[in-house]
Image 1 (cartoon, one colour):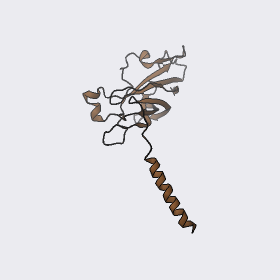
Image 2: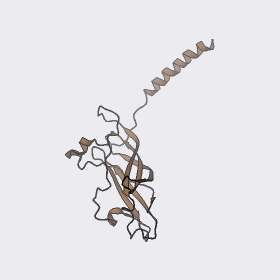
Image 3: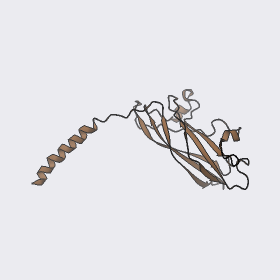
Image 4: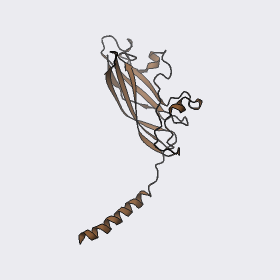
Length: 191
């Protein structure tokens, strides 16, 4: 007998749950992407040719009001999105004398301006190209051969066995709105 009373109650609760989900509204974010730092990790790999590479993984949280994040291969090569890069990273090296973090570009002026920039593909899963809020995490990997570019003698004397580095990160959406810039925590790279 209790089973017959339970069925209508469960049905009523199910209808109420469906009704309440229809009342939820989409979040409102700025159409300029906003990011926050999540994590930074390092993994060392041996290459098939016998070299050693330090891979730095940088994870950020993002939110964007119209969801226009990412570039496809064809978009990245088009003039509209030149130079086809949307993940902007600047490395900083800790000066062992001053204790300050200096931009790798000031230490190595020959580095191209975009040497650490990269591209990520569309992040939205919608296929109809409509604007909709988007939020999530994004992890990018940057590989550095052992000892490069962070082990400059001025910044890392030969007696030092590791170097502290950190990065700043920002992203661009397809409308070329640049997000805020976030700074990672320092990470140590061994020789």
